Image 1 (spheres, rainbow, N blue to C red):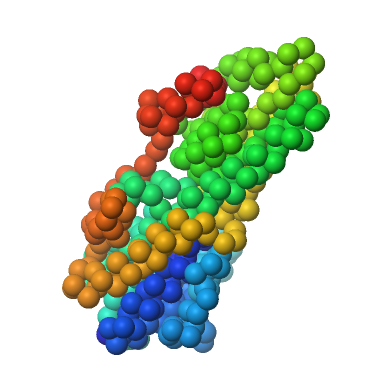
Image 2 (cartoon, rainbow, N blue to C red):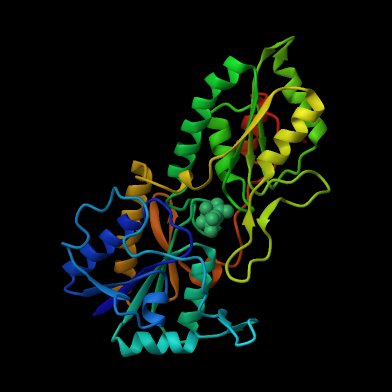
Length: 361
Ligand code: F6P
């Protein structure tokens, strides 16, 4: 057997742990493993360094490393590949069949595709076109419906919670409102978990559109005369009632829309309305960088080993998923059919509300 592994989309802490588990589990079966560089780019473009042999030595000591030793990209979807025309316009072409053929040319029997919803959709389509594929779910956003949790999420929550904890003292010293923007795209999981863990005063998530008036009411209630401070956590995709989310780039030629800017806007509005000194902070890619927390390392290693196990059983077209206490296969089609959002009436939101945390509604 010769299997390939790639990492696609935004990186997430734990990718290297998946790679290590795949290589070690495959090697014990006497299989060969190759890593594809930068998503599908390495194999599609026939890059000289596009495929790298992965053995025990190559994956030594990488479990604790952030990022991915293979590189990744969230651009250049092979099924909707942007090609610049002589007149400067961009035409999208489908290179899926070409890609499947490249796998055959390389003698690759199966692919382990590690990615979020976008990468797993590509993997599902390649499987339909004849490639044996097992998906491994990755994203700090935790927005994949078929797995209880994705690796990378707990690390992002830990980083965000630590940052929010540190902001308390400076906010209190200056009697300021601190507005902190966290990642998550259309899902508020990181903001919700970090906001609760760090005991924020206000948590704003895409699933619960907020009223500026209610946000400011809560902030005012945190001040007693001149004393007081407030911590507002805002998910990058959060939106004010009857307004759109705030984007840095809404329709990029290639890749996903880029959220960003809500914290600065909200800080300005809070300052205008309450007269309180307010500062905005965007935590950004810090949430994705560095060493995974232990939970993510263990989950990523479990996912990697399970993916090899499924290939060994002759399974294809499935994603490994956490269904505690087990890691189970879920059809890829089903895994990417819907996204997982925070339930506005769910236990976690209710817990936060019961402690007086406002969602601005
Ligand atoms: O999907 C993971 C994620 O980190 C999102 O939370 C965020 O919106 C996006 O990726 C950022 O993408 P990029 O790395 O392209 O800036």
